[in-house]
Structure formats: structure tokens, C-alpha cells
Length: 105
Image (cartoon, rainbow, N blue to C red; front, side, top):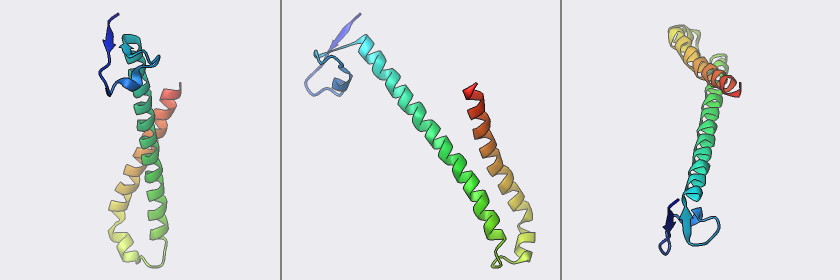
């Protein structure tokens, strides 16, 4: 295995686990695996936030439509738009839960 000698103040210094000034292939591979795990975790957090935002927006729109401030004529006029909105948001939530269930198996 080839060893990589570190320069002074190298950006790869954190990968040198045993602090010998040399970054081995194993240390680089381990660092790459850790970055992949962190990126995957961040991606899953973003997907979870997106699903919660979709569910929250459906609840907020439902509550807003049920208030006396919104006239029946506006609700009737926006009926098809609201249907598409609910369908799209439910698709986001369903995809998140479906993917989570698929990955957990």
C-alpha cells in the first residue's frame, strides 16, 4: 500500500488517525466512508423535513380554508387547485414513508 506524506498544514491532516504524518490508503478509505455516512444522514434529514413540511402545509391550508375569513366563492373557485395541492403534498409524504419502509426491510 502506498503512503502519502503530509505537507505542513495539509487539509488531509484530520485523516491521519495515528498522527504519524503519513496518510495510508486505509485511513483515506475510512475517511471516505465516514463522509459518505454523514452525507447520507444529512440527506435523510432533509427528506424527513420535506415530508413534515408537506404534512404541515396540508394542515395549515385545511385550517385556513375552514376559517370564516375565506369566502365560499373563493373555495369553490380554487377547488381544483386545492385538489392538486393536496394530491402533490400527499405524494411527497407517501413517497417518503414508502421509501423509508422499503429501506428498513
